Image (cartoon, rainbow, N blue to C red; front, side, top):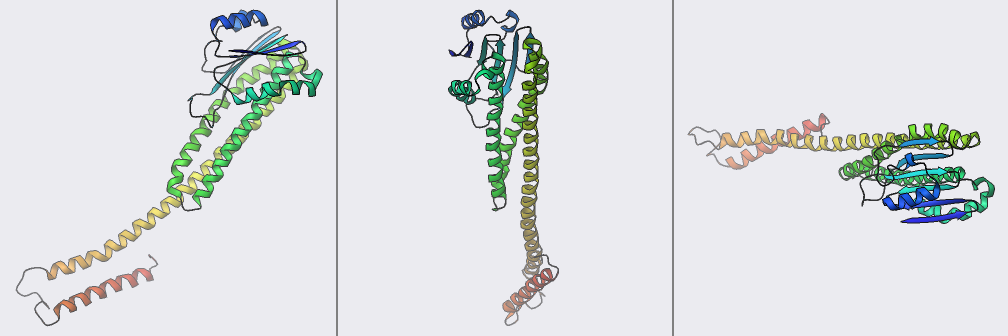
Length: 302
């Protein structure tokens, strides 16, 4: 599917899951260098940046947080020429959709600043980085829910929830980490392709990326602290339960031994056979139980 958006002297072509015929059509219209078109119909496993005079191509993966219908990051290929911006993707991406709706408004507000393809490309990439902050806001809200659950005595339930959030954050970090080298190449590539005047915008994107990376690491650090706290509380609870069972076993063991002794079928068993022997034996057992209970209380074991 191909969507075209035009403003003044530039054209943005957004292509979703292109066919070879669509790639040839777009490449001819946008005058894309042939070496930039070899992987436009398939996803690649890494981020890459290519450039030459008057053309730039960068492939970036963007992490997924809420969606469960796909198990891989969103891949977007950006190709900028002097007159066209081409984006190639393989799924619906909300950030791209929202940018397309705001495209004309952004152009009117920024006028001359967005009247060139490189500025439109950098503006779109900046917009997509802003969208990543919203995804991190969602994960941060999840961490707050986990924190509340931990201190609401739902430690066992939080083990599973922590693992889910951890999986998302780790995937987010790995996907975002692939941008580093591509953005470094972008800084030199956009200068070589379109001139030094766009270098500050590329530097701003690198700064944007570093801020995202720092926030991801901060959330991972918070998650690790919450995991340690949850495991500490859970272990403490389990230890308390085990201590209670150990104390109960320690109390009942001598009583079991005591009743076994008096249950032996012997001729000379003491007390047995005398008047009130049952109550006497029960009294001894009660005394032993109370003695152990007081002793454990004194030792502060219970």
